[in-house]
Length: 215
Length: 245
Image (cartoon, rainbow over all chains, first blue to last red; front, side, top):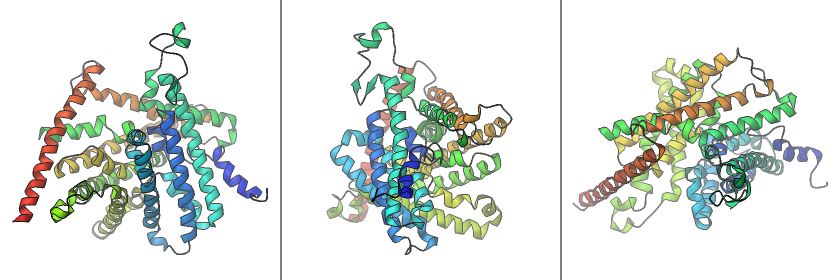
């Protein structure tokens, strides 16, 4: 525990549940919904955001005393944009097919409000080490929701996980399909992402009543 | 003219930013508690999209695309700067938002008071950058169409936020299960609205089964792409000629 004091641990772990960026802070929704039809895309997106947020928070925290507050938004955007260009080029070089699936949503990490939100709320007022933990924690909380949504959408929508059929073969009628189970193609369409996230919020808030909003 | 009308309605209803691509969801969820503020933000989004999409189209066409620098001379024709597009697009958007804010403040204080607080928010609204990135990836052929696309996407976003704000004002009087109150029910309503908007998919083809729709859409896109490419080549050629002269 020498590495992480109690406060640092809570920085890292709080965003996973009770202060989750997507379900509680309402940050970074756009990409969470658009690319979750497949588990693989969700995982890659989660890792990209983890990278950009961890490094971005450190950079902003190091520069926090140098940035004039009037132009801070532009400075932040430039920092994120440079990091995102790195991610985009790496994806294009090593996972071209996947970068086609993600299309513009890699670029949209720049305006992912989760990143700007944490810069404004945390990195501008804290040191680089704590900002790094905050960035990693929040990106992990974001990634967690992405992976949950991606898991259910791919499992129920196409009966596969990471492209591997897990429920049997729908054409040869093996596994679950032999007793009349059908894939729900609707899960692959965009509106279901919204409804799945809505249900996650419902479950989370029923378990922890303190999070319930007033109307 | 026909393609303008087609793109206009397609961008508003079928490729609606909120319901089909989930762009600008953060501000959509955060600022939709009251109709008046929703109208203010929606108007600002229309305005900024209609300005930045054509601007970024020019940047893309004459600076960033593969071979776009050909107008500088034949030795620059091989350059492909498209990896810079994120940083240039976002810089354009951030400066434009700042400029618009200054101009509006100077010439129309009344409009500034109603839009004012939303303008800085817009620089980081993913709908704006998304508009430019989709413009790039869909290869919109002319400046006029790019303006049309920006304007229509903005109107689509405006419609969406107006609708959800009106619904949220009414839902305050309903008996929603406590854990769903606020964010949860908004998500689910948006999902249902998105399902509703999917029915507009038949608008351009006049209905028919889903297969027909997609086939027709694919065929149409292919048709569109070819003339677009020819036009681009023609443009490039005429530019070269102009420079050589």
